[in-house]
Image (cartoon, rainbow, N blue to C red; front, side):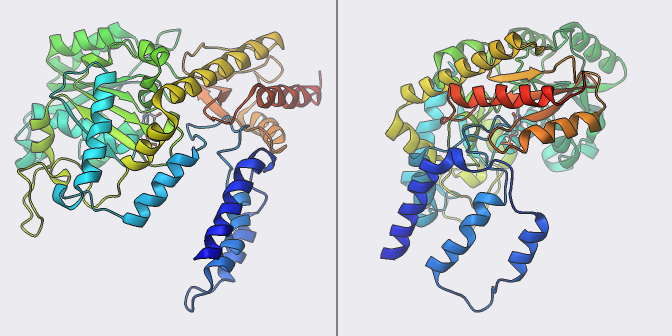
Amino acid sequence: MESIFSKLQTVTENYYSGLSKLSIVPKRTVAEIKNYLESKDLVHGENIENTLEDILPWLQEGNIHVPHPGYFGLFNPATSFSAVVGDYLTALFNPQMAAYSHAQFSNEVEKLLIQFYIEKMNWPSHTTGHFTSGGSDANFTGVLCALTHHFPEYLTEGLIGLKAKPRFYVSMLAHNSFDKIAKNAGLGTSAVFKIPLNEDFSLNISALKNQIKIDRDHGYYPFLIVGTAGSTPIGSIDPLMELSEIAKKEEMWLHVDAAWAGGAIISPVIANQLQGIELADSVTADAHKWLSVPMGAGMFFCKYAETVYKTFQTEAHYMPSQNNNDPYQNSLLWSRRFIGLKVYMAFRVKGASNMAEDIEKQLYLADYLTKGLLKRGWKLPVNSALGVVVFTHEKIERFSSDELAAFHKRIIDHGNTWFSILKLKEKDYFRACITSIHTEEQHINQLFINLEEGLKQLPD
Ligand SMILES: *Cc1c(COP(=O)(O)O)cnc(C)c1O
């Protein structure tokens, strides 16, 4: 034990001090990975210190290295040490969250965090919420609760028993988890209508109104509007106030998917962007995106505890019961880990106000990136307020997808910066998102250098 802890200490210290020197793109090929794995024995067991030494290089060089300060990729943050310790303790103590009486302390910690967010969203205090495996799980829960509210009979008879076909509405930039949800909930993907965008990529409100009317005339039952507050591709925010007005008038459920930005509502700057979130019936927010905690840590919030309970209620006589208050009766998961501890540790150790400052610094860095790109002749088709920067250049604008992918690969193969390719209205762009607590101006400057070098290699 002693020596494994001293090894882990060295690993951790080297990890934080050497983070920026690691290659973001994997150095090991898939063939090498498979060879390595095949060469190892899972049957006889071996010493833990040796095993740790042996697998570390593969963890460092076998995956895209997302905690690197030059990783401007998908919404995967670097994790703070306090949150990592929280996750370690979760695994060590392994409380069972399903039954309240089995994990009173842990359930109370999570309730406190949920209440903390409910206050930040300006929701009434009788509202409810719980931790989920992630945003997809929380979105799924939102759709199920909306179904329960509108079609209580579906809980016993299934969707097949409904007289009218349910339909729900998302923006064309909404997260694709809604397609999966529609398939898996038994609604079918034709139940999801994707509302077109305005020129500026915002959701077209009159298109939404028209579609609801057309669908009613055709015998559909419009039951749910999903507003995205921080779209995955560009960080855009749907007009939540207007969506809420439509939802009220049409007697539909409003779910706000704030998987990306919702966790960051601890920052007043972000809270200001998310105004209107208080009008939603349910909300998704991920802690594992902008709060620098390890995956997965999603949160689901709902104004109607009774609806959530009806959606998931079941009686298991082998479970210790607690007046219908048990997490297994009020959420999709059953056995599950103490997700909230890593979030709680991050808040306790760093403090919400310091974490909010980290988020605001990342917004500043996204602005620094935006201005630097414009100064260097790059074009930005859209302005995002949420740390996402979408860009292209006249030299690459008319590239085929293959040509752009080759150009992109040449740049990210330097290993010190990483960004993604994004398709928006049939056109390819680059997308960089600043999410890391380790990112500084120097890492953005490195991206400028890499991009300029890439352009220079192109024929005029
Ligand atoms: C990431 C994301 C999701 C999915 O969340 P997971 O935690 O990856 O399951 C849903 N919606 C939006 C807007 C997202 O950015």
